[in-house]
Length: 143
Image (tube, helix red, strand yellow):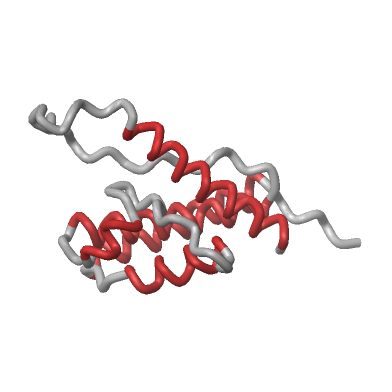
């Protein structure tokens, strides 16, 4: 469980650092923004264990859920400030707060109700990702 929390924290911090480094490469505010197509969020780093694989699947699922809420215009201004357009967590760390618990609380608070077809696709993808984890990291046979 501790390994899972450490992995989750490192993934969240990596996403925040990548977002900050992206900001440095943006054109000045006076330049008109380029029209771009929304790309899918960057996947988490490759897992090394079944547990980390399952955690990555859950993180991707949550990011996609938040991203879908944003695309449908269902995120509050506060939630838009703590989750970027790809669903990455960008909130600053709160003093005395556990970063993973902070992310879990914020992602739950910012979650929205999605159309049935969207939730069905997200759930199908999560199930498929976890099945791939089971194939990639099979449980050792019990003797």
